[in-house]
Length: 382
Ligand SMILES: Cc1ncc(COP(=O)(O)O)c(C=O)c1O
Image (spheres, helix red, strand yellow):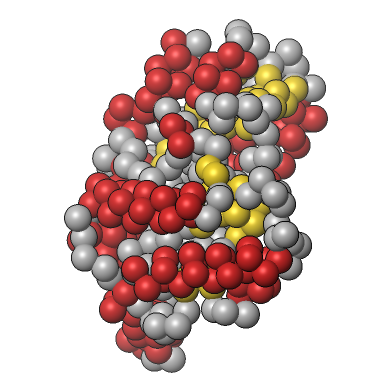
């Protein structure tokens, strides 16, 4: 298991941040890489044509390494909604078809499909939240021959419920149903191998569990879609783009790999170095080690929460990095702001408290959370 990594972050001792599912803090080295990148732009004469390709190439390689893909399978995107739009554009559906999504899915996994469904006269099929929190069985039950696209997470963003993607992917592939994954709330902590799962598209923002910058993400594209339609008609993702003196030799040919789907100005000179730095750090720790360490941390914290009367409703399906707990006697509306006034940061989704630590959280953080919650319950709940 990994040692605590707080020293690599700028988090004061008296700040207890349990909200990585909302936004991961940048490691100090990533901050330095970003500042260096911003400073480079002050000296544009030091930025040459190769720089437009080397950093994007390295970022692709590092991301590909997390999911057992190749660099050529990876596009650089600014947001999950962008990746979803690319997927929707390249997965044809007919009027009688259904697109399957989970209830309470993050909006970036809903709107593109709703638009597509309206355009084609297709239907969105929403899998209701199962009472026993077994999303995998609920999806299996909802599948039928009409479902042509399944849009799934690995970890449900609201409460950390985990899906068995291997099992689901096997069934979906047999049914000839396309699979689009958003792994923003799991990648970097929960391992995934695209050679096993074989999604058509896989999307991930970097600003949460990859501890990277905002406005940068990656899109994995299965080789069968490498000749698909990009959202934009860019110039940097075409053959010959390296030769800046001949960009006016226009070509209608796009790169024959996933880089054709890159967002315009993808060679961002501060975001890419930041993403590279964070991805290198994730690789250095190792996702499997991160997973083990966070599972141990959240398990210990859950035991403490249970002694205070909190319950988690999906022990069997919990992602290792997420705690979602309820308090049956009800919680006051201002709990989060009360905790924030003590420098304790968590989220609330419906009745559930969402507690999402990372390697910077230490024993002092969990002790403080439990102590403050305990006092708060004594004072407020009669
Ligand atoms: C599951 C999931 N996907 C995506 C996002 C972010 O989407 P976008 O990059 O389109 O803003 C979030 C943010 O909370 C999320 O939880």
